[in-house]
Length: 333
Image 1 (tube, one colour):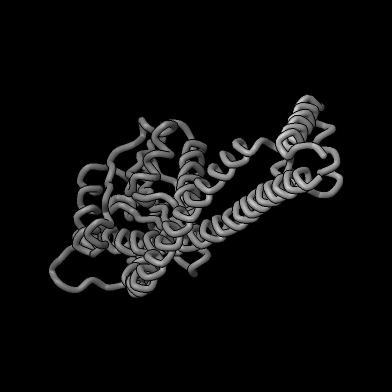
Image 2 (cartoon, helix red, strand yellow; image 1 turned 180 degrees about the horizontal axis):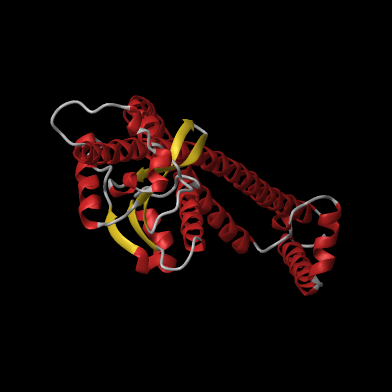
């Protein structure tokens, strides 16, 4: 009977010879039987050190994906809590500008020499495609105005940082003013009135188009273009076709031009207030939906990584058990 030391040495030499034969074999020959049985590439026999390193990489990815899932879930909950408050404010503000539409008119296709486009966007990202939609409508308005003829002037006022980032490369020369961080202290009528005064003082226009997203539900919004006329536009032929001020009688000592100027300024502030609230509400709804989708995707990725990690760990445990049993059998033989 052979000594236990010599048997152990011979079994070690046989294991080393099998390992070298396996290492020198073509990769396709190694993976073909496993692929036929439905196994993944991660289940291919590899050295123990390499398998341990791959498991550490998978564990690190699982940890990072889990952290991302927690962040997106928290952002979804914050957006959902803010959505209801913003929705109530937006719905209440609609009654401020709707009478102006019936009185002064709203005609986005009206022709004018000077036009001003006010684009409302968000200051933060991760809110779906609301900013891209506003930018798309802005580009369309700009091209339509240029098609009206030569000598037409178009300027842009951007409220929100994300819209500026998408438009400045193509329309940088048409930018007139920028307003950012408008939601930092909350949206209120006083703030909107100050912004509208700055826009009116620093820009000369016949027609103003305001582009924003009107809130419909937590998962949908409607791109909207509101049109505001200047006081000079009401005296033109195009303006008289839209405006219905002649159907009303003026009371008091104020002239019709003074009344029209006051109405135009208040209409500008009211429409801007409603537009900012509608756009902010749409932003919260879009962010809630986007973060919900991101949380689900992170959960799917985490489940796949967990399955891959468990398979690799079980394969390593099985390999170690086989080696132990083989060594014990060699000692007994």
